[in-house]
Image 1 (cartoon, one colour):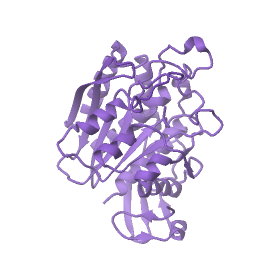
Image 2 (tube, helix red, strand yellow):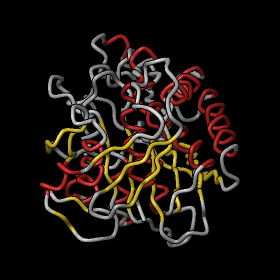
Image 3 (cartoon, helix red, strand yellow):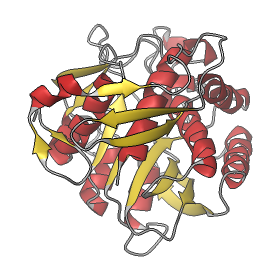
Length: 349
């Protein structure tokens, strides 16, 4: 399916890589605990950038909350477009986002699947501080795959998957971020888009000349944005961000369209202690929602996506199998990704 090192700090000048050694992390109240612990964590932390001496206050990402949001999605069953589980989950996600902001749009549309089946598209868009022109786009897909075509047991190849990691993990992280955005404003406006019909691409083994059978919801939104002439400074897509010991490499499509954003995110991840997760390693480009946001809407958008060199697919072990269930989700990984994205968006001026 899902087929340089200079740092841009805020809107100021580029600085030499050696300055990264001087970035310091100051934690208010207590040392940052691991997400699996039971000790009380601080509500905020302050990151001080020596060059500018500007403290950046970042909310504390709650991994238990993010995990609960993943769990709630999976509880509906496979979120395959056109099913009752899909409809119920759409209502849940819409209601949850409306509890954090009054500016929620549910975008309905129609698209064609690889087999020419007409599919209903339900993209869910939540905006925070919609009056601000300078914006950041955060996104993930919320649907799950209709067939486990990479399952080792061929008997399961037509079985829909739970998509706990492949879909629900990114959404869970974004819902927890939305909860913080309600409580603490960023300096830029934030839009969260949950894309539908991302995972309805051609099954393994089906040969055709069609190139755009994946990411149908983001293709639809990119051609029909929720607001005329919508634009954002940059976008971050989260996909498969919940498995234990996940590693995120500098994916090729992201590096082609938005290398400065990749480096911004990866440098921040390293600065706050996540170098074992965010690897300074470039890997091949893939087809995912960010491809069409870049190509059609011209918004520089990157993909934070699990890469595993030990698997034939290059994705996490249970990708597109029936074992992509809630047992694959690790709170530490959710914390790593959520904390990193929160730090990025609260650092932007």
